[in-house]
Image 1 (cartoon, each protein chain N blue to C red):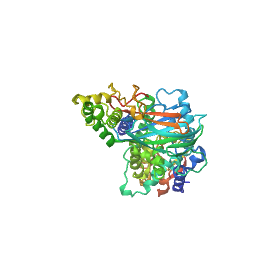
Image 2 (cartoon, one colour):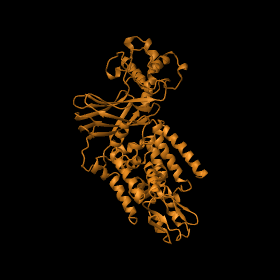
Image 3 (cartoon, chains in turn green, yellow):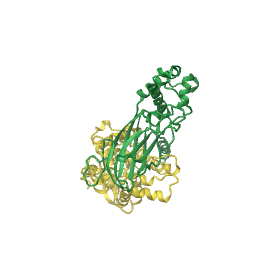
Image 4 (cartoon, rainbow over the protein chains, first blue to last red):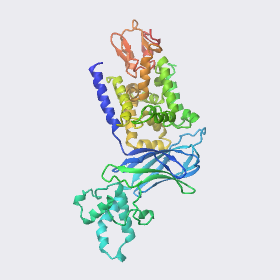
Length: 251
Length: 267
């Protein structure tokens, strides 16, 4: 074996090891089962919190006896929007049956069917940042105003959205990117909420219409529900990683 | 068969890639190599995987297993016909490279192929086993090329290229196949199926048919090295064929003015 061959081999191993260990978290693949009563994914989809768009590939098999139409939604974070694309043959020769997918719903799923769904997720960055900025700027002001003059719905809604957004996106800094130490009192309060340390009743679940209970909000997830009964069929949690707090809530 | 190689490659593209993907639809109902036909994942064994999990992986991709085993066995006796004639992924690269003017092509022949290929295969097998990561799926020609063919028709296939790995796989395919001289650098460097196939080719060279050089007829003109898409021919005083890289494309056989290269049993 020549020295050149040996060197090329060693360099190749080094490059390919690096390639194998490095992960681009703008996409993730999650495998799960669609099951009556609620199937689970094998693991959550891990995505990098600092990106504006992501691809999630969800593959799943249908466990008997489930049969029906399954609606797919991205839930748990209003700052994210998703478009769903079913992976299907370009020209369906009709030899094998494939469940039809339209209007974000799989029609006529049958036991042992397999589905592959590509979910394009986008972060509503402009809206979310605007809302977050508005919330953080107005927050001290709203506490000083008498309740009757507060635009409660708007401000709380905006703050809640900002909090929810920041739970996943920027847990340790405000929208301007300041470190926590340099924030003023109002901003620090918001940052504490961002990290889930706040004791505010604005727990983040209000926007879902679940009231303002103490139970923390669930994180974002791609979820499958039976179109007729709304029974959960599969939930694929999405976890945003890459910083303190990580954007992880309970799953 | 050698005369009709281009036609066979085109037929393979039509039968195995979108929009038709006939073989997949007619057999298992899959739409591409991802799933039952995956020829890569079943031997990328994860750290801590038990026999049950390994068997499960083989069962999940049973058509891919059959494909790889069939390719390896046929290669042992006949040479790498799967790679040279039938593989739609390698074929797509080679046919694509025929559309590119020669002056724009990149020549990788100064890089020894075997150490890169077996460096890749070693990491491909060892990284998941050691739990340090994986090259499987993320860098996959068997996923990228069918998605490329389907992207014009299906949004899910298009979505593949909206992520870092999709872009990387596309760039690798373009640089190592479409604009590569011969169109087979990807096969030569980064294909684990090709790497396993090449081992079978080397091991079976005493038993089966291969492309050989009749040394006393060879005048060392070097025309064969210029046309070899896998740079498998080393030119000394006579040509020598490396069976670890040779695919029986028969380009060398056609161009040899002395008739010194032929396909048959090794003498």
